Each structure stands twice: as structure tokens, then as C-alpha cells.
Image 1 (cartoon, rainbow, N blue to C red):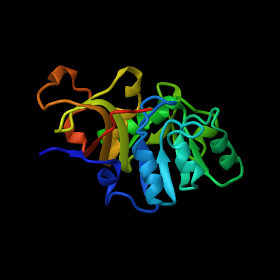
Image 2: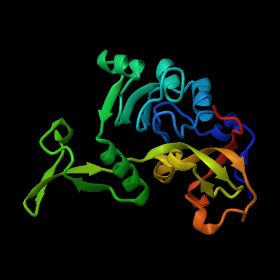
Image 3: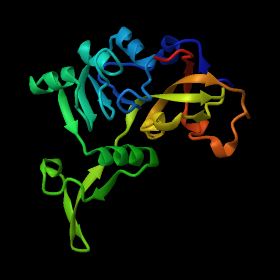
Image 4: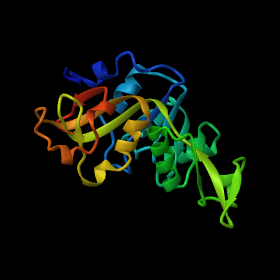
Length: 221
């Protein structure tokens, strides 16, 4: 059975609701599910918690959902040059849970692997560790971090077959596979459709078991 849907609107139909948690792949401007994000904006769901490394850039990616005031909370690791992200946080309009980047990646991976918590030295003795248990192992303090999971993951792939087996292109892989695994449902935007069986099993970056719906975007920005 093909998992390919005709458009972003159809691929996201019935999956969006107010107050949900959405996990989005991407790193900077690379690997963003750029055709799915505008559809979330169009639907108009509010009060979103969004888990992503960053929040896009001016006019692109998750910035669009910040601009429309649909995001209530960001769980991310980089504010950077995103002035809208910065201003909404500093004004108290946007809640921010800032993570060291490696910790964010591991929290997402843990969510997909079914590991509810893990320990890391990163952040010990800083604001990152405030309110979190700290334990000592072999003379070193470690802070306990918890998994991240989402109602919906939206990601971008390079190639996909109708069964949902995916390949990513170079650094555009970034957070995408881990995000796919940590979502209760996963919708994928991809650039190229290939026949089932045409991807060598050793070249499958993410197997189709983690993918529920796919939409083709042959002309990404």
C-alpha cells in the first residue's frame, strides 16, 4: 500500500489539533519540511509545542509559525540570528526550553528508542541542570535528562519509495531520522519518488516502519 499523498494538505488532514506537540527536522536552513510547515500555518492550530534544533530564519521554515503566533513553546538548542524568536522569548510571549545541542539530539533519540531518561555531564552546575536530579558516577556528577516525544513528526527526505523507506542527502539528514522515530505519527516531505525495491537495503537511512504519510515536493527552495 502506497503511503504517498497528493498534497501537504491531504497528508496532514486529521492530524493537527490545538495544543499538540510537533517535532520538526532541520538544521539551520537544511532539511526543513518546507512544504508541510505552511500547511500547518494555513490550518491555524494554536498553542503548539514545537521541538526542533532552531526555528527557521526570516520568512522560512518554523519562522512562519512564530510569525503567526501559533507556537506557545519551543524546545530547541539555537536561537541564533532569528530575531523574531529572540523578541518573542524576551517579551515573555514564547516559552523556551533551551537545550545543549547534543542533549537535544540524545533526548530525541531516546524518545524514539523508548528510553525515558539518561544521564549526561553536559550542563552540570549550570542553569541547564536547575530542577533536575543530579547523581554521581565514578566521581563525576551527571544530570538526568528525559526523553522527547511528539504527537506528530514532520521531516524532509531526499528519496522515498511508496513504502516509506527513506534516503537523506548529506547534511540534510541532521535531526530528521531521530525526529521521525520519536513521533507518534510521522509525515515526510521528499524530493524524489523511486520504486519499491530500488533502494539497496544497505542504503536505507530510515525504514518505512517509522513513516506513516509521504508527500512529494519536487521543487524545494
